[in-house]
Length: 201
Image (cartoon, rainbow, N blue to C red; front, top):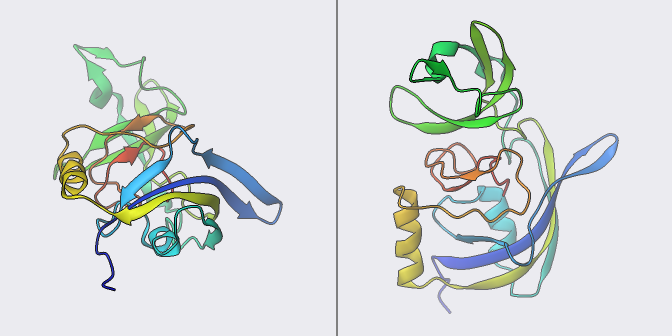
């Protein structure tokens, strides 16, 4: 039997970070809002996809990803001091969206989209952390496969439309930073569409 190249996979899971103090829940899907993706598109972390792609509907899983398999090391050079003027609308600073702890969409000179977390707002600068929120962390996923079958042509086309910015759905239940389309983030800072928190699969 030939291996299916593009699988439609739906999973429910709890995501934990793991350290010397134990396990810490950071994200959880719900039965009503599972994480759905199509394999082979780089939509999910490669290591996450490899751990679930061959599991049948109803099978459970529990696996860890090292920081190198997930989001790599935290890099201090990705914490930047940006001019307040960047975040002004009609001459006024955007207090509604730019505040400590907010996760906001950004775009660089090359047109690439990504997310940054506001660390501090002063009279002159906005300190922005461009590291993934889970950079440097060991991740633990526990969950169950709700669906695993060959993707239809319509589903593949629908995903391609999303990757080109024609709408976006979020699969998470509770995402710090909210949900939004992030075409150059995927979950390794590549291409993808999902939560601002990175949807850590």
